[in-house]
Image (cartoon, rainbow, N blue to C red; front, side, top):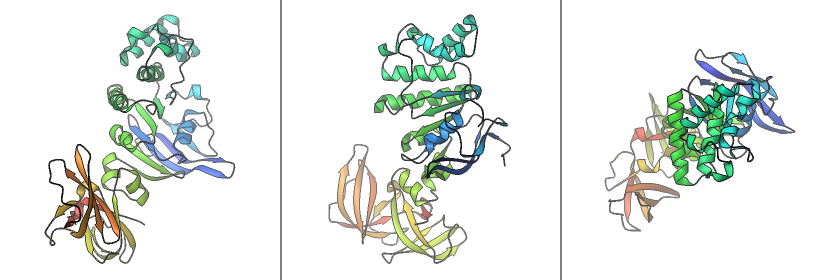
Length: 357
């Protein structure tokens, strides 16, 4: 059933290749003007889902609605979507202006209007001065911006991007993330963005759908995914986390006390989804672990410092906690404790999450 603010609606959408189910009966919504990333490892179904929305793959089942209209039976050129591919897909024999104007030419737009819209589209990405050059004369970052300009030139309802930044170096990639975010905000675009890069998804998106083996593990805001993962897969795939195995010993409202396999007990404020005696994993991000000498501190776990590694903006501490191995982050100005020394790793009840093992 469509939600009232749903602009794009995937309803029980599936894709099967032979005996392999690549997308498994997914149902989710995207609001108008929203920037949504499809995030997951290779083979999770994210690109296949994007290609079904674009019209380059046919669903094996289910339906796709865009602005209240079913589109899964329509050819790509009738879906009013701009697509930016990983390899840019620019025509090498055409000038930049001809590349950007190609979608308009195929739609029969008059030459005078086509020229005006190409100029506007190139100015959006600040490359109007390169209109007469060929793609081979441009850098990778410039080609990526031209591909984006071509996707925007006919003012589509939706812009689809399939890992468009993966071929760029780190500094240029981060710069382009900000450029695409600014265009999304300024133009009010609805964007579906495929990536396998967790940092990229967290940086750019309003919401992120984390896919695993054709299913959505969690569809949430970046902070929701990072601070409140619902599954072990999400906790481990988004950033870095420490996982402590245990069993729910007691419930009190939203909070739960967990008896760890090591014999210690910890409290988590977000344990309402689990029943007493249920096996769980306590997920704690490294920056939420603090080394203290006070055994009465919140969720204090006895640890031995095994190593510390300098990372420029922080120090990475490797800790042994019984049979478990933990990672904590200390500020670069903090004195690193001696290797082999003892301490307690403490974290607040509100700084952890419980996930199913």
